[in-house]
Image 1 (cartoon, rainbow, N blue to C red):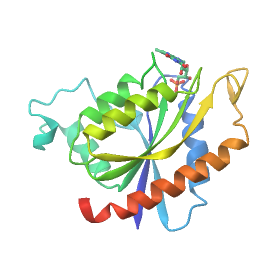
Image 2 (cartoon, rainbow, N blue to C red):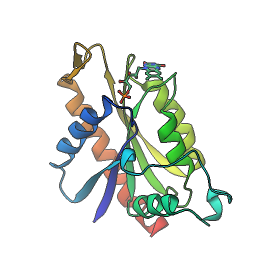
Image 3 (cartoon, protein in one colour):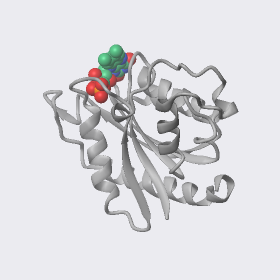
Length: 185
Ligand SMILES: Cc1cc2nc3c(=O)[nH]c(=O)nc-3n(C[C@H](O)[C@H](O)[C@H](O)COP(=O)(O)O)c2cc1C
């Protein structure tokens, strides 16, 4: 069965990303024929990139890299849940992406972003990063605003319109994740 990881890209204490990822995972549980799994980067503590060889060489020396690579290798596609930090994605997500190479290649990627202005600038950067790693990024995305999708900036209450956008994203991501399976099998 096609497997898609929902990658939670923030690790900050009090992070808003945890509620967003849970919302995505809950909605994904209604999808038939595809398996979704939450992958929380906080569960894979990675120092600043500390591998001697380039990731594209696939010669991982450190246990934390091997553990991260083994997890990411399990999936056919990725749904990145990203905050916007200083007009980009989080440093922790970029670092986690940088660690690997082949494990990302020839797979599909989609994005749910959030931030003061919806996180779309983080997604623009992630689309460029994905291109370098040979991930095919789907068009549909979900953009959540701290001003309108949270009550008092603390309680997550996404507008009803986001459910349709999320379903469109699921549909595109599932189709491309499945279609690309022969290329990375
Ligand atoms: C270091 C930092 C930089 C930020 N920069 C931006 C920004 O450039 N644009 C924006 O819309 N929000 C920005 N924010 C607001 C975050 O998007 C918002 O706090 C969000 O909740 C962060 O995700 P997290 O709670 O999961 O860590 C920034 C927050 C942090 C901590």
